[in-house]
Image 1 (cartoon, protein in one colour):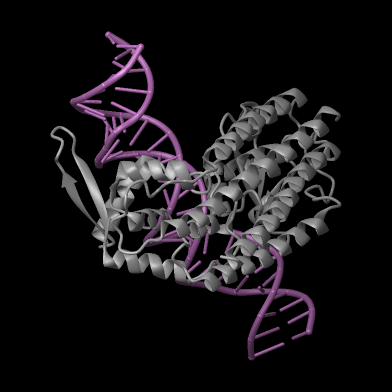
Image 2 (cartoon, rainbow over the protein chains, first blue to last red):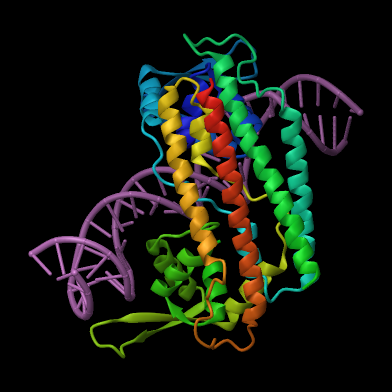
Length: 185
Length: 185
DNA sequence: GGCGGCATGTAAACAGTTACATGATTCC
DNA sequence: GGAATCATGTAACTGTTTACATGCCGCC
């Protein structure tokens, strides 16, 4: 999956592993995050497979940056993947719910503290999304890609952001209700 | 993580890998699913680590069932894990959102078909949760565990179900809004 | 006879996490 | 002087998925 995210961004423009990490953190991280270690190793593997090529930029001495560029093979791989629809529900994993499921034997206040802390984190996450509101910005400078319509792309980016907002609002509401239930247990 | 789910259920009562698979499918699957292959191998590893023991039940000839039982070490491992709270947001992964994020260049009708199909799946999932409503039932028979209060446990199971319901309702609403936006693009 | 459910596993591949490792520059 | 950010990577481990593999029983 990470492979396709990297191809997706490299299809906008060539960039380094570090740039990719920042784009992911600033946009897809809430529905797909990745550690830098995985990004670098995946890029290497993709280069071996002919999906990307890389050149080393030495324009600043002392700072070696490896710039990745998508190949035609990479582009067709991305198009092919986008071409066949998902036919299943993506599995979700939420370790908080696992913990809550088995929390019957726990101290009421321990559970409440855990949920209240999660509430804070979700509140912060929501505020973060609300600040992004105007636009996520993988364009930044002019794209070197032939024909990417960034106005159109941005509409889809915003839809995923709307999902994040809806998710956090739902989660906060559920946490509040759940905290109230446990308080009156 | 799966390890703790298995310990959690085995703490209710001893059972086989197959039973565990069914309990997971019937309760935690929407926030943590597992394939049978992983369940069996994880149980073996847990036995090596002294968290569970197993006996082979041959009461029915022809049908060998390996029944797993939690050990004291397993119980304390579970308690220890429940004891230290989550201090981060669990990462979420949703490949549909990844696909949508990079869907600017796709055919409008292809994207719409994919989203409408997801809508159906989420609708089914919601209905499934609504039918479970009365009670998830890992008790079934009398528990062999010393002191599990299944009435109390059930309250926590229900809270995770409420999360599933809220999630599906949120997702359906978002899908409807997103479909409408793309239709008028 | 075929299908689905019961029941158990192994093997290989792939994905993801944590820890180790280095070294420059900038800001306080 | 220390912390943060830029920038890149490897190694070891853990977790997850897919495919292969077997055999019984009951139902239609």
